[in-house]
Every structure is written in structure tokens, then in C-alpha cells.
Figure 1 (cartoon, rainbow, N blue to C red):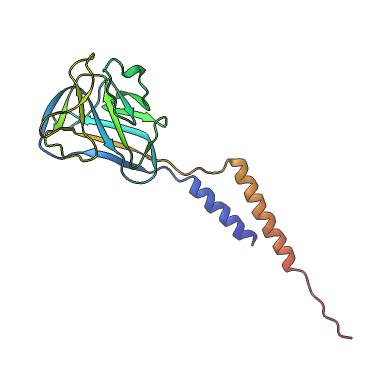
Figure 2: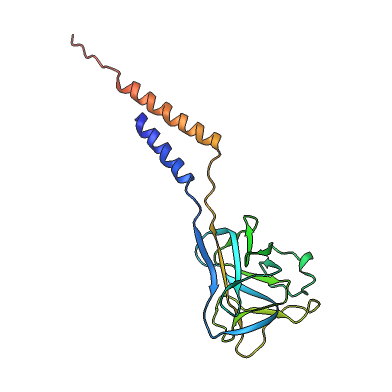
Length: 206
């Protein structure tokens, strides 16, 4: 029994130490190509199950290479203000481009099944899909830093080509002190059961 309790504790600790799983949260790689130049935003819907952090976001340039510049602001509702107003808006997270990625770290958590809105504060030239192939969101654009973002109003619509990835947020686990108490408790139960099994019963007949 003691060895069984120890094995259970080791298995539980192994599960806690398992690394977070990387996952694709949303992407658009479809449709014909076009080059879009503007201040822009793109909404997307998170797929999968559960929640994600360590969010990384990139667009694609005209050569289909990962592309990011300036800062990217993420909201949980559509933003209708100006480019210059992004810094004081009620956004969920902001990241500065580095290595052609916007990396948000653990500060931004995205939940599956919800729609999010990402807006760039820089005028960029990136790869788009004029046939609007992405069903989980759409493109927003602004012509200048003092103009407001608006959903693209062309007849066919547009989407940016983009990729959003992240790590699955692990379920909450007990603190180390709690684990220690649990292990001690299981050991004590095993020891008590072992002592109990050694009790001898004597039957006497009159």
C-alpha cells in the first residue's frame, strides 16, 4: 500500500511537470493574393478548446513571409476609434513587433470560441485575400493615423493573411506545500493499513 501511494504521488507530479502544448489558434492562408497597404486590423475567432497564452501573431508580406511591424493591439470587441487613439483604448494586450512576430507572452489570454480584434498602429503593406475566404473574422482599415478604423466595405470583402498561435493554458495545480501534505497523508494511510494487516486474531474455545 505504501508503494502504491508513492507511485500515485510520482505520477501526479509527472503530470504537473508536463510542458504546455503549442497550438494554432486561428489562421487564413486561403484565397487569391493581393497587396494591401493601410493601417489595418483583422478580427479572428479562436478555435480548439480551453484557453491560450504565449500568443504570437504574424501577418504575411507579398512574398508569403511572416511579417510584423510597429505595435499590435488586441481587443475583445471591435475598435472604432482612430489609429492614434489605440494607446489609450481599453485593449486586452499590446505587443511590439520583433523577429517578424507580435509576441504577447503570458499577459494575454485568449479563450476558444470567442472573437478577437487585432489592430496595427503602423501603415503596412501585407498580403491579403480579396475574396474574403476567412469565415471567422474580417479586415478593418484606416487611411491615416487620424482616421477611424472601419470594416472593409468592398463588394467581395477582404481578409489579411495571418497566423495566430499560442500555448494551451494548463489546469491549475496545487502549490508545492499542498503536494507535500498530500504525499505525507498518502504515506500515513499506507503505513496505518500495513500495521493493521499485521494484527493477529486468536480464537479460543471453552
